[in-house]
Image (cartoon, rainbow, N blue to C red; front, side):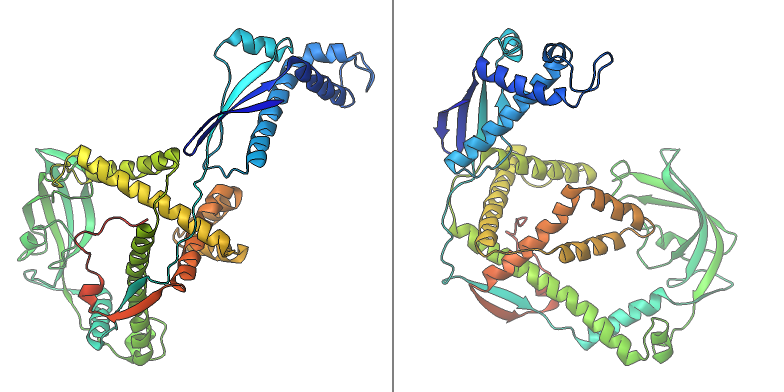
Length: 451
């Protein structure tokens, strides 16, 4: 096998590989000889099938294996001899002339093919001793805990049938049929649906037009679906509903006390308050971590400038752009609605794709140098959490991940990234900044999707 480098341009490499006809014949003969002791053919005793007959019966398929093995061997040789780290799987290109290939498959001519590949860039990890990042920290107030408890009480409030008109805060049980331009539409029909007036749980205007309704009354409700409605085929359209009020229910009182807490598995109201406070605080801490991580990634992005593997960038951009187009379609919006053009948006999201690839390479090399490891137990715990997101389908989800190494790798990747981020945070100065809840969850005007 002869391997010759024919291109070295940036991160692109190309190699010409030639397998002489004599070597092809030798490899084919070796494979057929091995096959001789394994194959069973009618009319021949085990191990006594003539190689010439084997070649006639199996020669073509065995030669295909010979070529594939040669390609794999050439790939390994190129990587090992040149000390390369690949950005993607090598691309193999055989001659366009089918006659040349056919002659080679019969070991009557040399087989020449090209291997093209992209390598990962070489760069040194930056000194981060001068980097300072801010971690926003918000504390949970007593009023927020009380508001959360009140929401829990409202969701668990008992309702009882009442006579008379429905008022805000009451619940009505309704049947309805919705039509757009006189035609019923999918999802526009319901029976025995409970609507709490003033809750904002339905299309804007729907609940307001039921105020004053009585049991047994029929009403026509006209509403317009929001422009950003989740179902694109309904967004922005006017609909008319024939509504029948089946029952009007008044809300009962809920005492937020120890008995209320016991309904949530807590021994006392104080215990429930502690649990609620802890839950809210975890949300705040996660948001603070998200902002801290973004600021850290911004700082890392500013520290590095190196050539990126074109194919990795294209793959990342394709994924990002696909999501952008899907979001626009789902929200019935155009680039003009977003105050931009498609060309400007493409340029912006390509920069985002480049940033993600660059930071991915930096984090990968950082983790490799620091010997960051994700244990199988950590992956299993992540899998348990993922399974819990699909109640009723736990077994199917578990089996899917157990049978798909690639899916399990997708669970491992974010765990690895978070560990590397922790490692990097230990190298920089982290300053905590007390902020309000509003500030914690506000988005900076110039904030772009993070890596």
